[in-house]
Structure formats: structure tokens, C-alpha cells
Length: 93
Image (cartoon, rainbow, N blue to C red):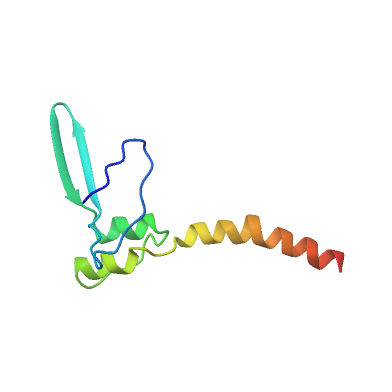
């Protein structure tokens, strides 16, 4: 089963184990349609690990990045939602 999004929002990266499908990109236009799997490098970039050297098989890379937590999202949450309240609590004590 696949999920096709046409709203410009990407679904989460999923691991190919446990019955989930691999991440597929669809490109349409000019009366044509093409499909391909995401590369390990693309998965790394989506997860905030641009420049990370991916070794091993395609399945290993997809498993490593699938269902993972995006590093840049965690950084944003820590900076904007955790550090400021913690700082206010510390200052009030």
C-alpha cells in the first residue's frame, strides 16, 4: 500500500520492515509519470543529517532513517519550547 500526497506535505519516512512500504517519489507533468525510490542521501537530508555518510545497503539506510526522529526538529523544539520555559523557571527560583 502506498500513500500519495498532492498537498506538498511529505509523509513520515517509514522503515521497510514490518510491512511498511518504501518511500517512493512520483513526478508527473507533460503527460508523463515517473516513480523512483528515495535514495539514502535524500533520506538523510530529510532527517536533518545532510552530509552524513551512508554506508551499507539501501534497505539498511531506509531502516536507519525510517521511523526516526528528525534532528533539526528536536533542535527547534529544545530551543523554542523547552529552553525558554526552563530558563523562566530557573530565574523565578
